[in-house]
Length: 321
Image 1 (cartoon, helix red, strand yellow):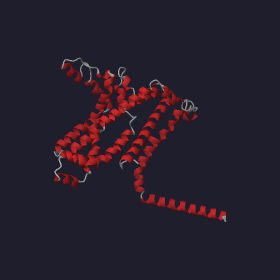
Image 2 (cartoon, rainbow, N blue to C red):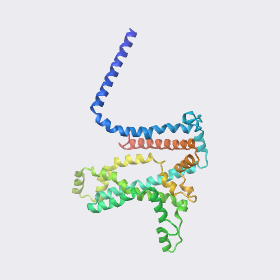
Image 3 (cartoon, rainbow, N blue to C red):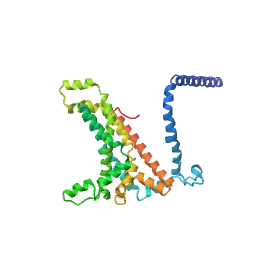
Image 4 (tube, rainbow, N blue to C red):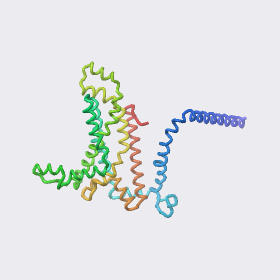
């Protein structure tokens, strides 16, 4: 009896599997246009995002080019220990997190404020002019931007130092002083990206129900009160989602900009994990060591992303998942 019951259960499971498989095939046939549209994105992510993850194992190996990645002997956590015991570890961590937090706190609110006030501007030509002027810096390449910073802050011919000299003070070599590096890095980034960042918030504000504005005006609300009680709550879900995504990238500081602005005098403040990875991995060819640092960086980002998402889910109804 027991054997018969088991056979019946297996037969029932097979029938259920066949039913689900047939249902899935019918669904794919019916919606094949959607699957074809998403196919290029899936292929892109497989080739450029998931296939390279094969190289993560380098972080745990003593890489030998003759043996290849899979043939090289395992080393366990030796490269991680080397990084954690390095005299540069705490300095790199402090610079990376400090620069990223400074960037987040100073730069994140600016596009929100710009979008809220631009949304209240009724003169369309002026509004478009402001949007165009603030968008343009986003299209300047990092190399050109760093060149502009060098020109403006030059101690001999720079505009800023000409003004300082005009007030009777001595010129300052800003890029040679570590205490100025973070502010130069952050505020040049705000200038370049704040206008572009307003696009998402303006798009969110475009979806606000016009009846809410009419009701607020009938109640005699001023523009500031409309911003506070209508606009800001309406874009709050967008703000929360973008904030979570920014927290998830907190260990990723712009490598190109930091490296191009770096010199021997400001290295104390400008040496971050990304520039250190480039120097050890590419210049010194310590591939496995730089892979271990990169993996550590990624794990911290993932942990922060999960924590920020969980906190947001508990405090509000908005979260990434």
